[in-house]
Amino acid sequence: MTPAEQVLAELDGARRGSARLRAWLIGLTVITFYAVAWHLAGVDLSRLATGLPKLAHWIGQAWPPKIAEIPMFAQRTAETVAIAAIGTTLATLLAIPMAILASRNITPLPSIYYPARWFLNGLRGIDSFVFALLFVAAVGLGPFAGVLGIALHTWGSAAKLFADHIENANLGPFEAVRTTGAGRFASILYALVPDILPVLLSTALYLWEFNIRASTVLGIVGAGGIGQELKNSMDLLDFARLFTIIAVILVVVTTLDQLSSWLRRRLI
Amino acid sequence: MTKTFDGRPAVEDVSFAVREHEFVAVLGPSGAGKTTLFRCVSGLLAADRGIARIGGDDISALRGRARRRVAIVFQQFNLVSRLTALENVLAGRLGHVPAWRGWLRRFDRQDRLLALECLDRVGLLAHAAQRSDRLSGGQQQRVAIARALVQRPDLIVADEPVSSLDPNASAGVLELLRGIARSDGVGVLCSLHQVPYARAYADRVVGLSHGRVVFDVPTERFDRTAFEHLYGELGTANVAASVA
Image (tube, rainbow over all chains, first blue to last red):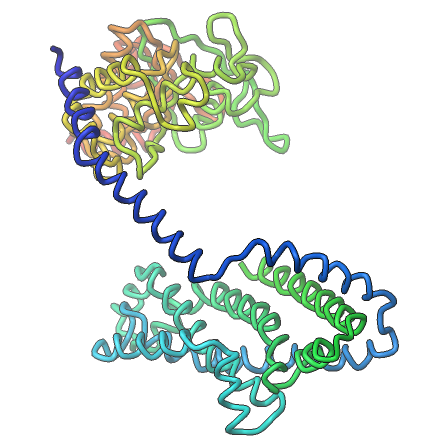
């Protein structure tokens, strides 16, 4: 037996033994997981089959659209875009100091690295929608509650994404500037910020895009924007109005997505 | 052969041959056109004028499986880091086996045995089951050479295969390439940055400067004049200084 044949036999032997058992176990676990999830999620294909014709019937009622109300829809959609813009900007500003605290490589206070990460995970773990629900109770109905909801959740997301970018940044230039005797903050501004600023801005724009879509439903809990009209139309079973609103949302969201991704391409 | 970019010639009227069993080193300062030349010879780039031929066939016209006739060893190894050394070597068989084997990464006994024998030849049989990103640079380059070997090529093109390796690993890699040329009847075309390596391992040295061949000589006739031709007086002065 040549050495190569010997190694081949060993490799095949290993595959037949424990590796094969492991593959079976993994397969079994995955199948069990999906079986349980299928059950818990209450998937019922027969209900989909009876529901689809209903949906088709509603779409049939969508024509003609409610043209007369479009200016009002546009204004409420502008409110939604504004909620997202103010909320995201606020979150981005708050995220910068938190991102520095939550970056293992440049934090001035290593002892609060983990608490900072936990705090951000907490913010991220609670959706804008849930925060908005709380703020509607606290500051009253209207878009401001939406702004606070968006800001708080996005604070967590933005700071985590920023911190990940900082941790992956090349620290060589930063260390080089530090060795010239520059202070930590000056070094961050001088060596790190020019490198990562485009990525951070691009991330902020992406979050804004995301938040515009998220804000369209905030009105359902009374936190302003087009969502309120969406819910009213559904409650009244006014499908022409409902589909007109969806069309307006689609146009606005797609346009702003295009604008934002064009800006992001220019940044990087 | 000539290749221009935006009207500026990168290689101009370059012509030479690599025979079976022959290890040809290409020397030249950065920007001399080595990379362009190698991309043309590898079939990754088509020349504007002239043809790179293998046997009688135009290399840039080789399509699909026929491309296996030219094997390439890259400066940065270009192994799939999450696959084992053996799986990386087996990639060299993809031009020989049915496509589905590639999709499923299932090779028959004969191919796997051939791959292991090639790994044995490059001295890495013991590392066959190791992930390629766990190997050192020199080991990775040797895996890449094994991959080129199982391809059963007529020509191996190595573009600065040792620029990112330490002297020991470099010597090992060049030794292997020369051995393959000698015993397998493969032509090896290899660009190098270090003159001593060319002296030690090549059968013939081709000097490239400003996109033109300035000399093409058997290694024993590669001397000081040729060196000055290539790198200029300053280079010679530096070498003289380092020798002194």
